[in-house]
Each structure stands twice: as C-alpha cells, then as structure tokens.
Length: 526
Image 1 (tube, one colour):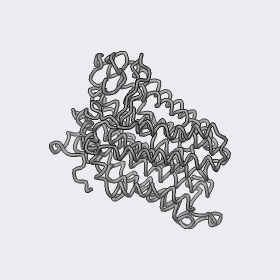
Image 2 (tube, helix red, strand yellow):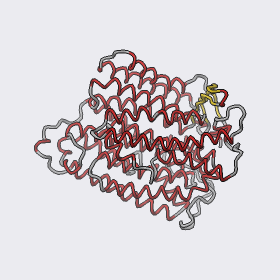
Image 3 (cartoon, rainbow, N blue to C red):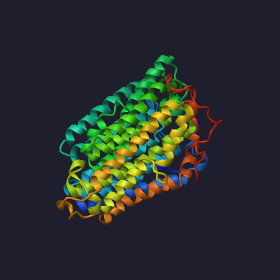
Image 4 (cartoon, one colour):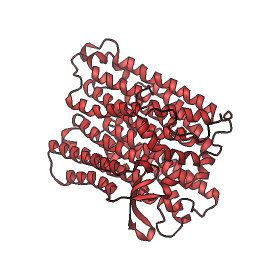
C-alpha cells in the first residue's frame, strides 16, 4: 500500500511539536499555582496553539500525494527492541488531527460553565494531556508506540469521567476502563506476536517494515488479526463489545463525551484502516463476512435502542453505535466509494456528535435534567439550543447539504454495488435514524413549556462562540465535500484493493456489478 510503504520526511518536526504544545500546557497547569480563571486562559491558549500547529501541518501537506505518509520523522526510542518515535500522516490521519485540534478548544470553552471553578485547572490539564496522546495515536507509524499511547490515553479519560461526571461516574469510569484494558491486553498479545514473527532487523515495529514480512503460518496471522480487531471493535464500538459506551456517556460531562465519542472512538476505525488492513490483508478478507454482519446489526440495533431511550445522553450514544456500523461497513465492504465514505463519516460524525452533546449539555445546565419525559416546550424558551440540537441531529441523519449526507450516501452506494442484502438492511437504519432524531426533538422542544421553565436563559455569547465553529464545519463539509473526498481517494483505493476479494457474506444476494475502477468521488459536486 502506498500510504504504508512510502513516506515523505518533514522539513521540521511539526507532528512532534503538535504533541509537545498541549503537553507543555498541561505541565504548567500541574506545576504552577494558577487561579481558576488563569487556568482557563492557559488551557485555551495552548489548545489554540495546537490548532495552529495543525494548520501548519495542513499547509505543509502535499495534497497531490495525499495517500502517502507525509511529515514523517523517525528517531530511535528503545533500540534493543527496534522501537522508534516514528510519526507521519496521510490524508486520513491529518483529517483526524485537525478534527481533534478543533474540538479541544471548543470543549475547553464549553467547560467554563460545566466544571466547578476549583477543579478547572485539573480538568483542563487532563484534556491537554489527552490531546497529546491523540496526536501520537493518529500519527504513529510504529506499532509499539501506537499501542503505548492507545493504553496511556485511558488514564486521562478515566479521570475525566470518574472525577467530573454524574452521580454514578465512578462505576461508569471503571466499566470504561475495564472494557478498554481488556481490549488492550488482547491487542498486546498481537503486538508481541508481531515482534516474534516480524523481520528482526532495523525498525521491527515500523508499519512499513512489517507489511508483507510476517514469517508465520496463515492461521497464526489470523489470530494476530483477531487480537487487533477485538481491541479496535471495543473502541469503535462494534456490537457486541459496545455496552460500555451508553453508561459512560450518560455519566460523563458533555465535553468529555465530545472527545470520547467524537474523536477517541474513531481510533477503532482508524486502526482498522491503517494497521489491520495493511498488516493482515488475507485475514481481513477472511473475517469480512462476520465483520459486515456485525456492522449492519450495529446499524439496526443502535438505531432501535436509541428510539427507546428516555435520557438524551444515552440516546446520542446509541445513535453513535449505529453510525459506527456504517463506518465499519464502508471499510470492509470492498468498494472504493464506500471506503472514502467511511473516512468522511469519521469526521462528519465527530462534528455532529459535538453539536448534539454540547447542545444537550447547555440544556442540562439550565434545566438540571436530560430526561426526555421531564422536558417539553423548550424550543420556545431556548430557541438557539433547540436549533443547534435540530441542526446537528439533521446533519447526523444525512440531510442533504449537511456534513452527514455525502458520507452516508457514499457508504450506501458502495454497499449496494457489492451486496444488495447488506444495502437494504443499511437503508433501514437510515429510516430508523429519522425517528431517533425527530421524535426526541418533538418531545423535548415542541409544545408549551412548563411554567417553571419560562425564565431559563438561552445561549450566551460564549456558548454561541463554542458552537459556531462546529456548525460552520458541518456546513462546509456538507456543501463543499469534494475537497476532502478527493484527498481521500488514494487511501480509499488502497482499502478497496485489500478488501476486494469476495468480501460479501455468503448469505447475501449476488453482488451487483460495479463500474470498472470507480472513483471514490464519482458523482459528488465540489
């Protein structure tokens, strides 16, 4: 694969700098006695600094070679194990870094009214540490480095949920930690196996060194593949390894859920694309029928479970389970247009989930509840909150012109080109999605409000500033998707080439013939 076997070195260590900026901010917050107001300012400055470095990376990135790893840097870390500090990004990795860099300052600004003042410094420091780990994970070219940060980022998330969440926060944080650690321990078996069966020369853990060089029987390689897939399926979250998510999202702060579901859970789908498929192509094709069935089960199950929720935080988390089903479907179906759609979906979902959780958090701050049956008529009292929730919800269910439309259309189009049966089931998920967004909107925001709600204030200037970049990004991705999809064409072709050999389940209907070598952006206006 071009994005794995080739890399373009950076003229400056821009990715390392992007790691260090939030890390330095976190250290300052821990070591110096800032007041809570100063802590807010420090966190915002360093998070915006990381965003600035991300824009620097975007400017330095060669869009004409977007499928190739760029801004690459490699430094020996643990030489006797062949472990390196090796970073680099292709178009997908860069997109995830920019999404993360955008959402972190948004979350910090939102937390100014959500986190108690005496704990603002520790919350901000944890978010900045988490951002540093995110940058490494989405740019790591060394498997061992990826694994270390994959596990280490559990620590700040655990404390963000366990210290700043709802009344049952500690149980939710522990459940999140146990699920994630279990997946990570299974993945560790695979990482050790890569060292045992790898090339044993030079940089043993660099992905480009491992591709095509595993000296192991195919059965063993398949077991290594399973160890990685289990960890990424927990993170994704793929049914049936999803049950930690609703409990965690119900107890976490809205900002923590934005980072957890909008960014961190994408590590699951990102890992499938950048590690699992290139390292284990045959095993990926071998497991594809099962993965595809689990993906469509997730689409339907997540949607139906969302319809039945009476808590907005849990409802949004179940919608995400359904959306992750679409992403995994696009990755494993073997179509370039579906693969490109899955990657755009990763970004689009991060934006819409941010809008939904932030709007719900602002609603909870004013009403003291997110229980749907206890609310009603809030649209008359809080029209901006209602509008943001509806706008983000419509983006998540793929209203044309908003961020979710193009990726969902691409995944469905690519799925139908490979399997009519899977496509039909996925379309049912689209129908269910309209119910799980519009029904709670009707119950929470329409009608006459209770008398005790009449004095609630709508969004203030800071809260509008928090939501503005998210809304603008949803509109931009919906109206001008071609810039992004074009950049992902090379990566999408690599994914579909890996997965193109009879990936549809045996029980599926015969594949519909597809045009010869379709482009991932065919039919999309720029």
